[in-house]
Length: 262
Image (cartoon, rainbow, N blue to C red; front, side, top):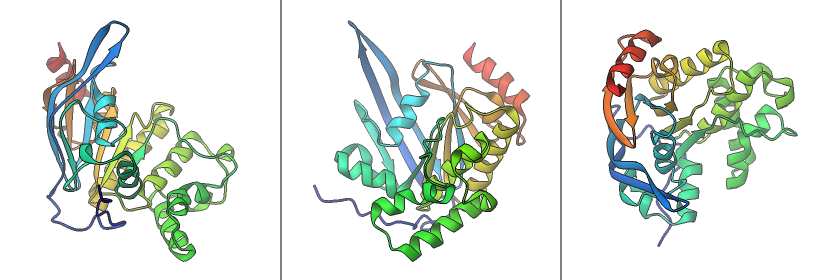
């Protein structure tokens, strides 16, 4: 199979409301001991450019499995996942790796920063791996750091930074290749409420101002309240959606979530 036609830094293409992601009838099961766990049961959803979507559910609801499949870190048993017209379930391991590096931004709960590198050097790693030219690396690294308002800390190493600052470095790294889709898996699980609030607001701004699609997995109503819409998972199925009336309205989200899951 030939390499997918993937261009770096091209997420401006297409209209502002174009569909970036389609998840179509996705099933995923795992064998544990002598039993089968059905993590996802026919999940379907769409995400448009510039949307900030939260996927909310209790532990074991399938939310992390879903975001791992969207990111090409695993493959569905049935169904399709299409990102920017690429059916990632049909790509080879190498093709999925290239696609993740060039068109997806992935943010984990752990910051995954190299302690011996500065913030700027950690951000630049994906371009270094891709063999980009030095001037391009410098220009795009500076721009990614600017987007997360971390210019003053660019030369600091992780141990000299707060947890919130380290996560902003990880977000800048995820934005380096101007991805069409940013995936955040419990991105504030290691942060206190002050820094968590800053990260949620930052992800909201990245979606709104950068016309990027952001999908965040969370179990917190406070985090989900920053999204344009909240997709609620229970036992591997989508059981409803919530549309926060205003950013940060955690009470509304928590109440509606309780209604859906009870």
